[in-house]
Amino acid sequence: MAKRLAILLTEGYADWECGLLMATARGDCGAETVVLTPGGTGVTSLGGVSITSAGAVEAVSPDDFDVLVLCGGTIWQSHAAPDLSAPVGRFVAAGKPVAGICDATLELARLGLLDDRAHTGNFSGQMKQVVPAYRGEALYRNQPQAVRDRGVITASGAAPVSFAREILDAIGLGSDELSGYLGMYGDEHRPASA
Image (tube, rainbow, N blue to C red; front, side, top):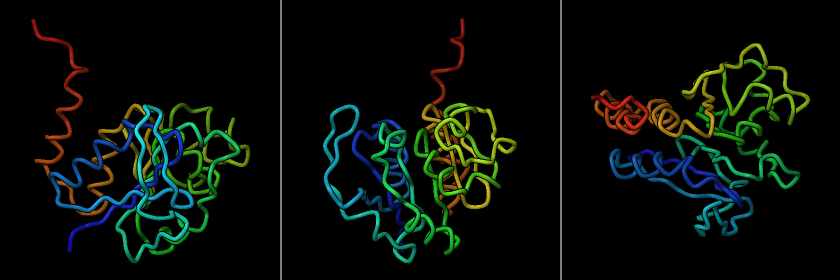
């Protein structure tokens, strides 16, 4: 049976943060990507791409998916951020991975998941600034690549490549070939040869 990824997109989601993951999972790994939204309503990205939802994230079940992925976007720093305690809690209880990129890491911090796990995000002070109850400062990794610890995957908004790799590895779709393929997306950051 093909792996299934539940991808949460919110109003104002960041187009680039889950695009590579979704395309690679579907096109290269034969997985199914399913877009869910708060309340099951359609959403529009920061870049103006409108998406029709396949369902409400509030009802997502770990029995139906291998991972729950929270895409970043402007909503996570606002009072309009959805409460994902129930769906995230179900995935954690079932031992299934939960992943958050960019400002979606703030939701994982709100839920206390980053208090006792290694993690990263957009910058070290953001978690405490936005989530006063956050207690994971000593476990914050100030690095450009995604971090995976005990079923929770985090990344800054500038790390969609390593975010995709960590998620695919976590659900058993990783390989040396896939890591090489994803690695080529970072080639533009290498110095040009003379």
